[in-house]
Length: 159
Image 1 (tube, helix red, strand yellow):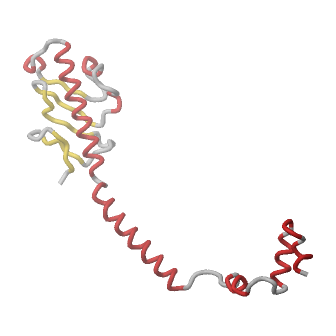
Image 2 (cartoon, helix red, strand yellow):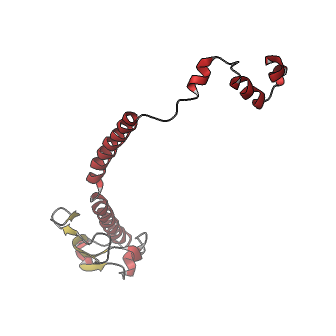
Image 3 (spheres, rainbow, N blue to C red):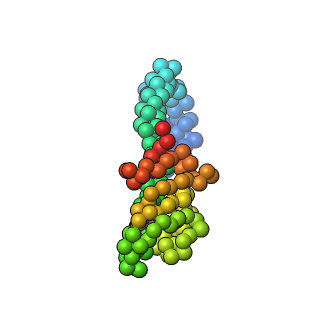
């Protein structure tokens, strides 16, 4: 019967199953095929471990939530300051020659050529003697909750 079921090496899967049902395979193989699924304790342990990992990740992420707006605001302020310095160098101007000027989405055109994309500025900058003296974010801008600190020369989150 065993020889007829497998017909040598080229036997089919149906013949293998029939031989198993007839009891020709070891009983250990049949015992393994009757176990299915996980126990309740195994599932609870996995869920608890996942919960702990999620809690750790969330605690680490919350520290970064507010820093993006301040970083991008300071990057823009640095870009505006660099554009003003480049304008002064190109035109051989001293800081006192510059007086007061406003750099925002609308200009001035002579400084705009040194900015990457002046229409995307998120604040209005007042330049006095070649340095940013005041800055006001647009109300609909990305960092409306930031304020400019003149003494530090940077944006900070409003406290």
